[in-house]
Image (tube, rainbow, N blue to C red; front, top):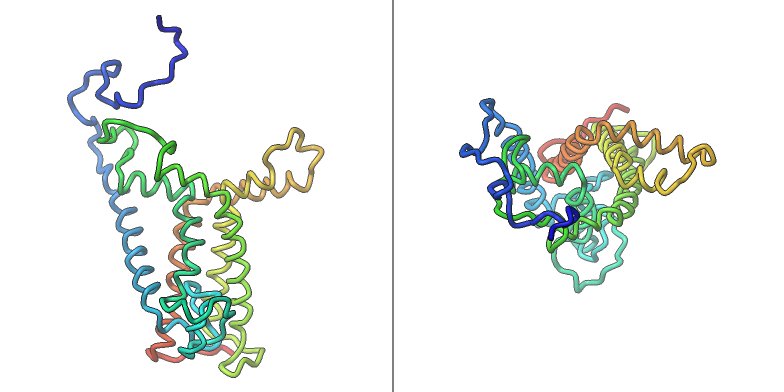
Length: 273
């Protein structure tokens, strides 16, 4: 006998016996597919570009700039290839691109981000592709099974993202030097690096996990005024999380591409002073 408390079946989908018998997949007449198609195109272009740059293993340092895809450079082959300073935490056994040691953390943070989940769920997996448009899958398990259960690692990738943002901030400070590492100079690359790190911080701090860290699990905000104010700031940033996600994605690719152009000799870095 049914009690009314049984969990819903995961195998019924939108064509289940308990759903309205509507033959049409949806009744929308607008171009609802434009948004998921544009999202898929944007994410696909970034994946192609970042994969090329990650495996290129070259043109990622032009004094005093180091590509955000390769910073910090942890592999020994950074120094042997004369691409600039590195931390040499990995010995000569690591022979492939040093970017693969770094990109796993910011990419893991973005791939598990709540906005990016919505973006690629709708654009690539059609789950669902748009509001009032049914997904084509017969069953739905949510994020309870592999591989989607790995989305729960987002809160841990957040801490790694803070470290990466700190390192990129250090790189932005070091960009105010000339080729001989003398302070007091500013080039176009310095501006690009500062804008990039500002967007990276804004995106990172607008994260839902950040809001939970600073303001979660509190019974009384009145007893924690500092955390309440931080929570409010993070909340205001969170309203622009989607825009910041795209802006920072574009800016980090632009910063890397600028370093590539300088390192490949396409042009010299314009200096303002």
